[in-house]
Length: 161
Image (cartoon, rainbow, N blue to C red; front, top):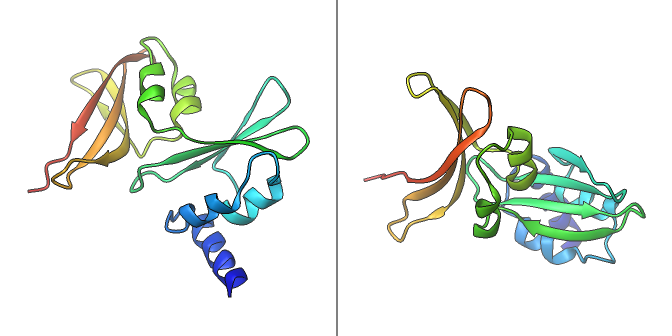
């Protein structure tokens, strides 16, 4: 039964559904779990980031409806080194004026939305990052100028009624 549940969770995760993330994360142990274990539980990554030390970081974004993005670092020995949920205050603070979209994505993962505002001459990427006490969703936004560089960041609460 447990094996069937793990298979179902893997299938849902591969489809981009975060329902089983909690259970799958409990099954992974840095320093012990392998790249194959990660793929079995989360499916193929949406992006692979190659690191200077020979490791690779796999991106598993739960955007646009989820509020998490997991970056899982696999060592050159194919062993899981680190699991990090990157949509957090520390990483939001790392987003600085002048950064490129690639630099932002490397920190926060793929945005849930990208929208161009012609009159403001900016493109805005958004990540759903939580909820207000009222249940209204909260978004972290990165505003890019026409040079495709970060101009500023902001937050937005989508009032639902």
